[in-house]
Image (cartoon, rainbow, N blue to C red; front, side, top):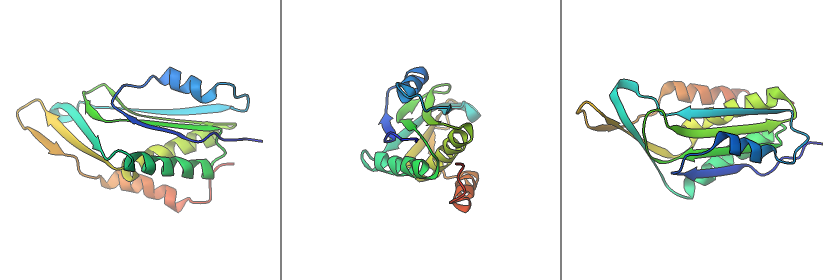
Length: 162
C-alpha cells in the first residue's frame, strides 16, 4: 500500500539543493519507484538583469499547499516537495523546484507537470523584471499559454494515472 507523506511546501529567498531535497523526499522509503523533478531557472530574455518575485507570506504557502494536496489526491504519490524562491533572482539562478515520488513513473511525471502548470497560474506571486539596457522595470503579465496549460488539467480531472 502506498502512503503519502504530507506535501512539503516552502517559499524562501535562499537557493535550494536539488540533490538534498530529492534525498529527503525518498529517505527510508522502499515503495518509491520513480521521482520526477522540475527546476525552473531565471532566463536572460530580452536584456533581463533580474526577476524580482514578491509574495504575501502565509497566503502563498496555503495556495501552493492546496495545489500540492490536489496532486496527492489525483495520483498515488509517496511524496511531494515544492520550493519556490522569492526576492531578486538573476539569470541562471533557480526559481522553483517541484519533486514528486510515486511507485510508478507515469504518476510521478504527470503529477510533476500538473504542479508546475498550476503553480504558474494558481500561486500568488508578483513578478517584476529589471533590465540592463536602461528600460527600467516592468511587472510581468499573466500569459494565455500558462492559463491553457493549467486548463488542460481541469479538463482531465478524474483521469489521473493509477
